[in-house]
Image 1: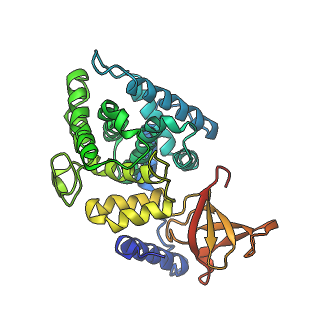
Image 2: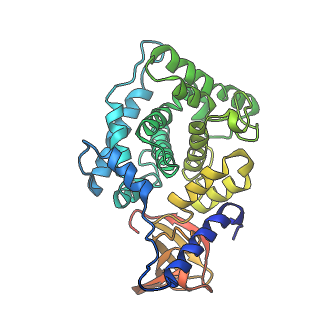
Image 3: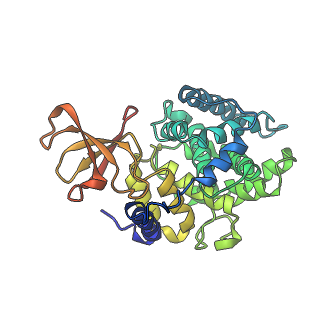
Amino acid sequence: MFNLSDILKKNKEEKAKEARMVNDPGPKEIPPPKKEPIQEVNIASVLNKDVPEEKIEDSHILYEEVLAKIKQIYSADLGKSFSIDPGIESLLERINAILARNRVRKELLRQCLYDYPIPEDYLFYHVLNSSIISLDLGMGLGYDKPQLIELGNASLLHDIGITKYMDIINMPKKLSAEEFKIIKEHPAVGSDILSNYCKGLGQKVLETVRQEHERCDGSGYPSGLKGNEINEYAQILAVADVYEAMIHDRPYRKKNTPLQAINVILNNKGEFNSRIIKVLIERVGIFPVGIKVSLNTKEIGVVIEENEALPLRPVVNIIQDAFGKPLKEVKKIDLAGNPVLYIEDCLEYLKEG
């Protein structure tokens, strides 16, 4: 287990306070005020205007539509005229509409955690997944519609510069110091490409593409910016980009579990905005729905429901006993109500939770 107290302490205190209010409501004639999710309702009402209701199956269709658009953009000849299809904004609006509806939102986020169906297309999947996670984080930070569209444009285009170096990044080995030095040019190259060919994107989008690999402690590139010198869109994208990359295979390494990815981010938290890490943990989760886990009892289960107040203690369906024997009937356990039980490790991610 690892220590999350520095990120989650305040959040847990707030949740405990809310729980005390519910358990001890006071005089019957003065019930405790109901805490309404004002932020989410307001965002949804804005984003859903003139956008059709999205269903679970629609999230899969939309995922493929945006993926196709990313392939088209990232496969363009950068030596010739390069432009962004204006239809991308309508796709971003549909993504935001889904992320504003919790049930469909969870399904779209789950798609970001699956293995890439076509491994050689990993750049396209990485860009799409990073964009979805970035938009979800932006929504968690209370962004309005124009901000989410700006963030979406930046995240969808953030790796356009890497297309000039595909021969290097596709090598099935860890990059040498010299190769990595060359690759570190891609944020500036990408920003320059977009500046030359896409005049309507706006300065903040270009700035975000250039700054996405900057780090809060100054250890990033290309300019070694620190803290508030880095715009918040780039700080969001930095967290989403690193998390997404770590939980998927690369030509030179195997994937990490979501637990390992969160642990790496926390161990390097000086590089990232702690407020954004907190939102990642709250919204994406440490143990996402569908992840296979092992308990301290050696039983194997699958996470079926997250616990926002206690992210280390989700609801789990036990599918194997301590000896690895499949159970005839699944056993449901809410770890929040079983303090002696806890998750020891993440295993594989399953498409069916």
